[in-house]
Length: 157
Image 1 (tube, rainbow, N blue to C red):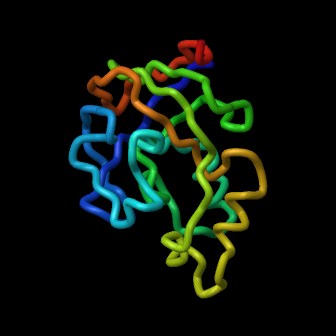
Image 2: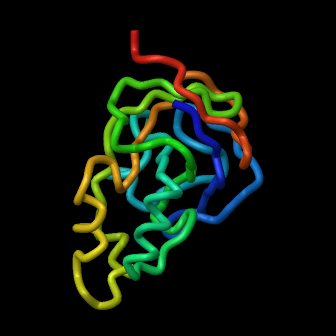
C-alpha cells in the first residue's frame, strides 16, 4: 500500500487548514498546527489526521465546497484506499513513522460546508469506513513534505 502526500496542512486553530510545503511531525502533531478544542481534537493518539484526496474529490462532485485541508486534515493522501485501513497499521510518511489509531468521526466544525442543510457532510463522511479520514499517532518524529511517498510499514507488532 503506497501513495503520495499531495498536501501538508496546518492552522492556528479551526478550518480550513492551509497548505505548507513541509512540517515536522512530533508526538503532539505537526509543528505550527493547533486545535481549538483540545478535549476532542489533537493529543498523542490523534496527532495527525490523514484523508484521501480521492474522497475529497468525490465530495466536491457531490456538491460540497471542499478541497485539500478544508476538512481539517494534516495530510491529503492520494493512492491509498482508506476503506482498507485499520487501527494499528503503520505508515512511513516522509521521515516520520505514523500508526493509525482510529477513524475520524466528523464533528459540528464541518457545518459551514453544509450549505444550510445541517449534518449533510457529516452524514456523507460516515457513509463508508474512514471516508472522513484516519487519525494517527507519531511513533518516530520527522519531516513530512508535500510530494513525499507514504507507504505501509507494517502492523503494530
